[in-house]
Amino acid sequence: EYRSLPGGAEITYKLPNDDDILGVKARYSFDEGSEVREAFSSAFRDTIVLEGFPDTLERTINLVCIDKSLNESEPVPFIIKASTPAIHLIRESLELAPAFGGVFASWKNEYQADIAVSFYAADAAGEMLLYDTHYSKIPKGEFSLRGFDDSQRKFRVEIRDRWQQYSVPLDTTLKPLFEEEILPKAETGQMLFSRYGYDDQSAKWRGDYPKNAMGNFSYLFNGKGVTISGAWAPGMNYLSNYDARFPATQTVGPPMYLTLDLGRVVTLSRHKFWMRSRELADPYLGPTHRYFQGAAPKYFEIWGSAKPPKQPGDFASQEESLAYWTAWPEVGGTDSWKN
Image (tube, rainbow, N blue to C red; front, top):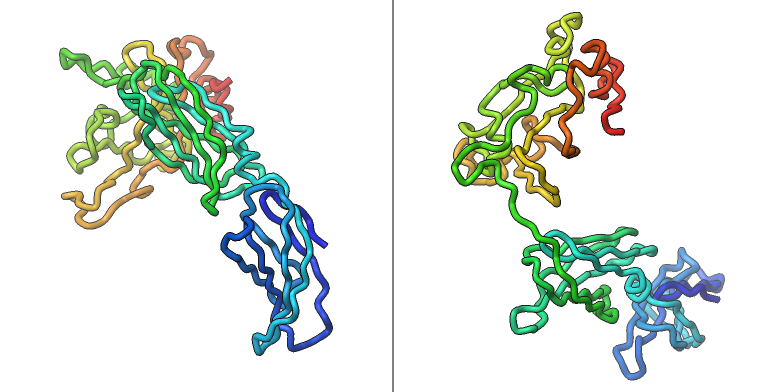
């Protein structure tokens, strides 16, 4: 007997009681006259899985038994019928929408099939050119194709499986959202980004790191790669920075908080994060790297608001403020500001 799978089938059988059996082989083809394919299952199993069928048509499968001398039995034919291949199911869920500088695609891949999602866009002459291919098998996939202006343009997305079978392309015409780089400086050279609450030390009430341990804070967002003379490193953070009742040696665990003032109201779409010493030819470190090392963050969140944060005067005490602004258990932190 068999059980239909998306683009395949799981065949269950009963082997003869013979210690000389090596396993079972299935011979089949995707289409009449096409290449004959084979799948093998050892004598320690009672199932064999066939994959890659492009449709739901009935097909004849021939099963043969193989002994340890590689002799084959007479084939046993029977008919199977695969269910709808995964790429066609995925194609039904595929959706496209305008994104900043391009198009955003999302889809569902319930059976976690290995797929390639190819993105095309029309050039000035209207010719569809391949710009990127995204490989995925996660249940809920998404990808953004970037790098376009905000003029109306035709986009196409096509899904391919590992048997080089394709879904019907999804074509759409849409207008990408306008996108530009938000620079930390004005054209005059004036720095627009700043470290919020550092000069008046209200950062201490919010749990922001209150010191400059190494380098200028602007190195954190100036768009330049890391060098030993152009890096900002906070160093260890101690609870005594916020409350003198704690021992000078008691450190604060994650998360670390920093508040950045962008100097104007913007809509954030994405950002680039340059890992510390990302280049192997770093003049300071030589032929090494420090990915996820030396205080480089592994997990981080970015939150934004058009309104200034609450001030010290909004709280009865610094302890109450820290409980609102942090998740640190030592000060009863609740991260309530995220609400």
